[in-house]
Image (cartoon, rainbow, N blue to C red; front, top):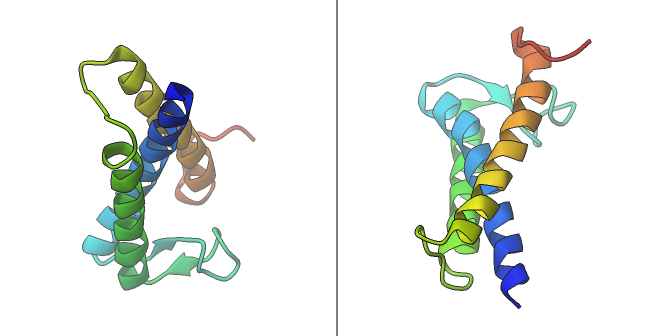
Length: 107
């Protein structure tokens, strides 16, 4: 069932990556998009909401990477699964947030 661990590491990477913009924006005191805004994902949520949402993502990412299976940084398979989750979420975030912040998302 090694693939289930890799699946968890992939999603762990996605959650850890998603934590970054929310947590950093919140700590900086800036409002930012979140699933709790109106409309969801488009409106701005308070910095407090973003800190909490970012922290939640960190906890879930931790649980998926560290508490599932036996994640090994020296295992190429484990690192690739985690890295693909980070890469996919990074590209999705660049596209999604770029629409609101002048990024280079395709028209």
